[in-house]
Amino acid sequence: MTTFLFYFFAILTVVAAAGVIAARSPMYSAMSLVGTFFCLAAIYALLLAHTIAVLQVLVYAGAIMVLFLFVIMLLSLGEAVGPAKVTFPRVVGGIASAVLFAFLVVAARPFVPVGAQPPPSFGTLQSIGAQLYTQWLAPFEAVSLRVLVARVGAVVVAKSRV
Amino acid sequence: MSDGLLHGVVYSVLIVSVVLTATAMALWFERKFAARMQTRLGPTIVGPIGLLQPVADLLKLLQKEDIVPDNADAAIFNLVPPLAALAALGAAAVVPFSPSVVASDLDVGVLYVLAIGAVTVLPIFGAGWSSNNKLALLGGMRAVAQSISYEVPLLLSAMVPVILSGSLRLGTIVQMQADHHWFVVWPFFIGLPAFGIFMLAMLAEANRIPFDIPEAESELVAGVTTEYTGMKFALFYMAEYVHTIVASAVGAALFLGGWDGPFFPGLHWMVLKTLLLFTAVYWVRWSLLRFRSDQLMGLCWKWLVPMGVLLVGAAATWVVVFP
Amino acid sequence: MTPDALAPYLPLLAVLVLAGGLGAIVSVMSALLGPKRPSAVKSTIFEAGSEPSPGSARQRFAVKFYVVALLFIVFDIETVFLYPWAVNFKALGWFGYGEMAVFAVTLVIGLAYVWKKGALDWES
Image (tube, rainbow over all chains, first blue to last red):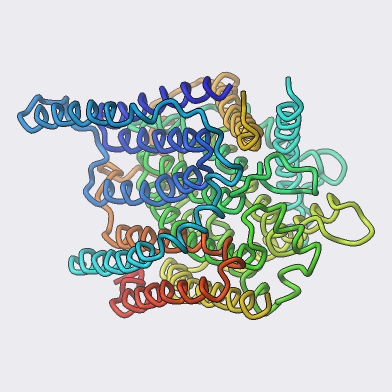
């Protein structure tokens, strides 16, 4: 059952992700991206990463997606553009993606056979928080500064144009 | 079929049908309630005291022509109404109606409800964009801007019961209140305002009056649903009611002690509290006027967000001082 | 074999499939059952009930929506960081209180900054 669901969502993820780059209209790309986010969330849930799964929906599909949509509206990109042209940067991008993919496959291979059952608390918000606020405290506080910088940046970028 | 699977399937069918029936009743109830507030009678013809009015509405809408306007993006236009219903009903899965009647008591229940609430903006935006109608698109943009703004106080106020109970599981949060006090009762100076912010933000996220700028009929016709006909319109309409019912139920679970109460079984109390909150929502809806866009955004960012931060701090202080 | 930890997701999936399925069936039913008498006037957009205004509806939108989205993401992420802390708060005690105080200070500074800069004003 789990294996079937995994392959179901994995195939859907790849199809939706392909839709993101294949769609000629930015709005269709965005909608495909939403599909990708949801399938990814389902895969995270299957991996028992409960928190990541729900945050994937909350932050990516709920927040970052909205920013993408507003950027599309801001730049008036809603209408479909013409057919794709083969240009030099696109060829380079394609090759780079292929190399990255090969690299990821090689790098991920040692981790593929996972036999051990994780502990019951695995992936819960409790266990993440327990580590985040003790062992990884310094990076966490650094994140707070980064978010502050991001906010200043957002205001500077957006308000200077108004 | 294993026990767990059977339990899951039975309860999911149960929850979906109960919520849909409740939605039909809510349609009747709102009309009757609004009518009484305006010294009218409301629906009286179909069935006893107009009780079958929602059925009549449904049958009528089924017979309407399904129109996709010129230049509308048909794919997205047809795709989003079911998605709106899906997003609205999806949150109902984790609502605990009694200690045993819950479809799925997720470990991250509170965050799940908020996440589903956050993605309801996507179908609404899709509807506005695909309609090829300036007013619908403007309504969609306003709806999204409003929903995401009120998401922040919603996240903050929902965190107060999480801090007080130390759990994200809705069942545990309710049990905690059953063992001690409801969070609106004690500590009331934290629980009560947090409850208020939560309900306001939930209303705003569902775009209900006084937060219905996205579909202000005097300026935007009917917002994102303007171009929709028949059942596709009904799905959006229904989603709004489902959202209100689920919001009331979650509010009751987070702050009003959910199924906890004397004499009657837990299910009765949960339903009663949900109904009371729901009625309060409609009371507000038929009493108040609509806010202006800037007032709406000002209320959220300049009042509710700072208050939410304060309340989270207060709840933390409370827990750390009186463990 | 389904691990126990995945058990709650099954009913969840069932609710989502049911809800989406019902929505889809109902839309298709509406398309099948309703009358089909298309006409040129009927298929123009309704808009405000009279002649539709000229031009495409998908025009550029004001930057203020973009500002709201940016602010929202920043606050959203900050609030999401508070949740793992909130569930562990009782175990962390005063230590957790202190570290979140530091985090909250940056949050409040950020809020004060965007307020001062007028990014919270809708019509500017």
